[in-house]
Image (cartoon, rainbow, N blue to C red; front, side, top):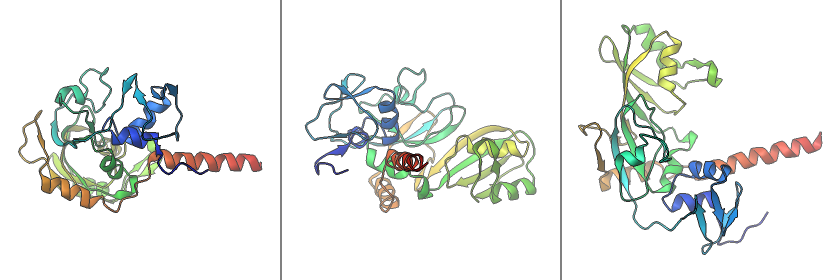
Length: 263
């Protein structure tokens, strides 16, 4: 199907405005919270430059000021832009710009969380195949063994997710504490990995995302990224696949429809 050359996918238009990431925009569309010129929309719909896009009745306008923030997220804060959720990260920061989180950090976890209104860079970072490093310091409930470290590094079967984790770098720091560097972002990945070997995570702190370090940023505080850090992020994702999540979903759905049609 051909499209008008000036049209843009609706999820990209919402993301480019700084309202949320493309993946979050897809969810808003599926929930029926997005309108285009007063009409409800569907995944894959497109918008023209002068079209009126609203989320929950609020007009979405083009964003001119790009914001990049590093937050030391405390335990108990939820990574969601839904301000109906108590303790959501957007209200916690209280920034004047509409910003959203890059990836997630579990409510019981703390540490580095990137937030921005640059939907393009978020979409690139979140691409599953980009293999961007994230570093964590983890404390568990019983003494760590060399065998545990070796097996964690070699990949752990997570049956509930029907996958095995990719090989990663793991280093023991003390009797109960280790460092781990992941290139995946599976749901509660580190906790699930530890649980597989009978360990319970007591504390989990993210200390690095790609070139961005948590450093000595106090817990609960945030800072703007430096121009050098922003440039490093942009360089790291410059060759990333910038197709959105919904593009891939729609291709799979179209393939499934074709297969059903042949049966």
